Image (cartoon, rainbow, N blue to C red; front, side):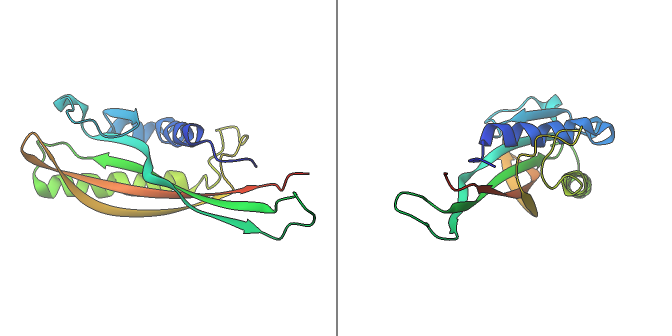
Length: 162
């Protein structure tokens, strides 16, 4: 596997989430990239997939160089965020229920595809992934909006150059 391609990983996460009919019916807007400053009120609940503010978490050498100029393979851990935003008109209780249901769906869908493969099982985007979710609150036009960030950490291994 080569260096991680962040755009391809984000697009694959979106493809996996959109491909599930049940989940897709719950989301009004899917977006590649960050949460915009202003969102149309009809665009909720929404799902945004973006790289973390610093997407490369770690880069470690595996093994050792065997000769001058030959580098060892590397393990690269990257982080991406799936940001789920509730409907702003929902009551706080309903918004939290909605967010936790969507979070469960994301964890289930990505947990079934830990290498982020295409629907036909080809083209893995990573060797493995780990999922962590945390609630957060954002302001949107003066209203508190419930959202949750589901952090996806991918692991990619590069081959040592021949």
